[in-house]
Length: 121
Image (cartoon, rainbow, N blue to C red; front, side, top):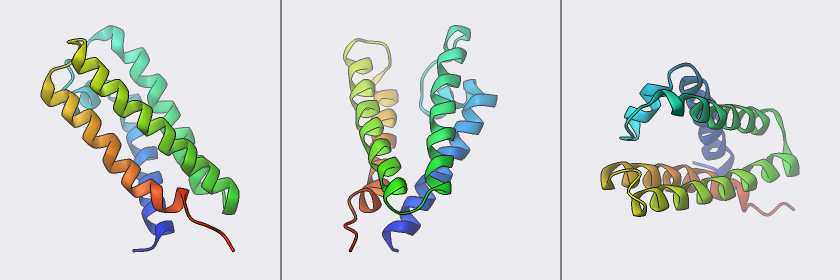
């Protein structure tokens, strides 16, 4: 599979997750093993919009602009992984939830990296 196909899959998944998390924040908590709570719905919808917007931008753009979006997503996902580990260290999430958060971030980064680091001729 080439890097553009992997990147497109990551972008589609990100956009779909953004829509799903916006409309069903409790389900997104459950998917990552994080206990739901009403106060978290607002925060969940904030990251859902980020995922939807960046996913859509990457799908609509071409060339260097798309690679810039992919690089931005790799950085955001790396920071998300750190946030998952930090939440576990502070006792905000259990070890299973932390593992899911970090593994999810690493998996999406693995799909984004080939296109984000592609060299153009």
